[in-house]
Length: 484
Image (cartoon, rainbow, N blue to C red):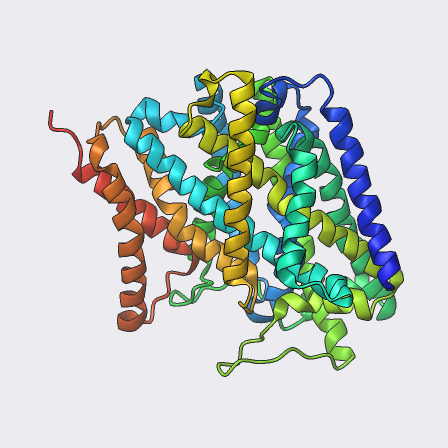
């Protein structure tokens, strides 16, 4: 594709988003940025949340990771579905009953101020890393597809993307994002479907023949029963269940959208619909991954291999084939998908980070309209800088980003998961002033235990780190319970 065509696609896409922002910003209130004025249609929220959950990670990293991990990620997806049921019938009723804007207000009600601040801090930490890593992947692809041709350095590419996102989210935040995420989800899913059609056409395969090719391929291994493997079914399913609860149900970014819906019943419909669409879409991307490898094998396109036999740079497979091999239509649809991934990776994250910090640490509810606006802008700018710094720190990493995201999540979301589960399933009162110590020690002990089990028993926790971390947090909370 020519540079002019790519620039035109980016410009038109951004213009559409600005138009959406203009219309959604009319008649806004002081709370529009944070709550969407409680007017969001549940079906739009559900569909839009898929794009935010997918981002560039699922769009690019899931198809690529098939080369090293087969179809094992589907075990994790099954655990996610179970986790979303927990969110729907346990967490959402809790949040609506307490009328929360920041969901970490629950910890203040249950335990106290220090626990509340600790939970919010771990969300800020988790979301900053997660958003940065998701945007890193999308920005790298835009750099490869477009910005390198203009000799624009990578750091400037990231700055440009963040500024563009700032322009359409700064006024009304979550109120705009509900609608822009819907559009971005559409482009993400469309790109996958179009690519599958173009690959099957290029390989002269009917739909039935394509299914046969995928199901007979060496990478189509769905279940791993090796107890020592990080991809073991039980490890993947349990971690999928817990990570769904942590990264969705205990994540201000995702829950803030559900809480913009007026009625609790509609919010529950939103979560169930979202979980179904997301599971089907992730399965679609896994199947796309095998088709990409089939195409690459038949055209002698290979990826570099590490010393231990693992494929490197798997995240480059989809972009390379879409832009350079599968024709103009595929290239355009892929570009639209990755632009959508870039924006959906960070727009709602910045809004959620801003909401959580201003509500949980700055008590913004008590401020005047002018003070709210000033604080919101300062905090949003600060988190933009933090995300930029994290992106640049990880810019040299190789391999699939999705594994890195879930690995990091096991350490950062673990204490948050432990705090919420301990609060909901026990009536034990704890010493609020000691909670931060527990929340810091739990991830450290999890890391050390993982090393010990690997070296002593050749047993890899894998994504199950989050369960160990949450369990240690809960144990620590029990040890600091108040004496009766």
